[in-house]
Length: 198
Image (tube, rainbow, N blue to C red):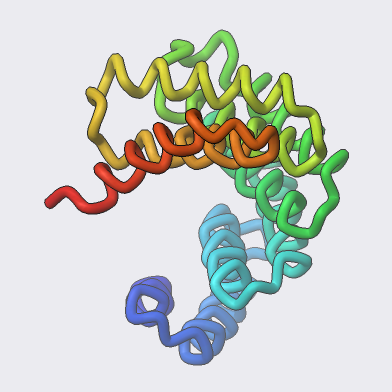
């Protein structure tokens, strides 16, 4: 069932994916309602919700997945951190900035002490915090996060890797807010150069 659901999702057949998830869930519940694979199923449902623009359902599925992972005999702290990042983004897309900030701060707390500051998971979380701060009007926090992520990614990947697009677009949005024409032009050229390279 899992393979069918995941293959349908990969083909972007969302109706068929939902149907496969329903069958998969019934099988898991017959085995045990606390089956650890339920977390994987809920994450797939959340992914479908995101593709459909249903961020409320996405956040509900993520909350249940986090709760289920947390009560497993050996919960993965890294996985919980990743799910908290996804939850933060889902809240941001609902304009629930306080909830989004709480979720991303919790995610970053899971990663701190376990991962290096330059670990991709920590950088992704900091990028998401920058996006939340930008949406919430906390400009200094947003700028600090975008600049820190950009600096780290440049050291790892160079000046022309697609991974730079996230923080560059964040900085571009800030430059447009402050109407700094020279900075807007510089960032737009940089983004375009990365987007158009082969």
